[in-house]
Length: 121
Image 1 (cartoon, rainbow, N blue to C red):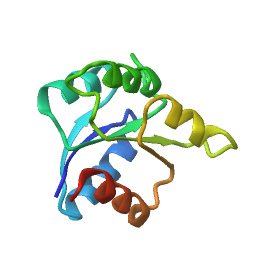
Image 2 (cartoon, rainbow, N blue to C red):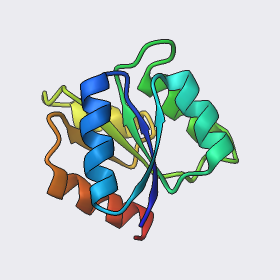
Image 3 (cartoon, rainbow, N blue to C red):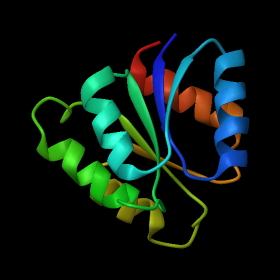
């Protein structure tokens, strides 16, 4: 299974997602803001990043752009997570450099399918 870096500032979302990902067989690394997520992505080399787009310190938009700009992390799959489900939000997340997009609350079977497709697990 995949090593997933979960970048999420909301404690309840972090707890729920990390427990459900672990139950699905993934190992989970956790960052609480975009800057920490960027540092962990570089240091830990996860298979995939689940990036909340609304984060403190550095938001997910900027963290994803920086991941893409760094040759060491440019190819790292990123799924953008957002509570926004308005027209154009998916395109905006993809334009920021995410490989895919999912909305909150998360539909776990759908998210697990996306993780498997992008991480090759």
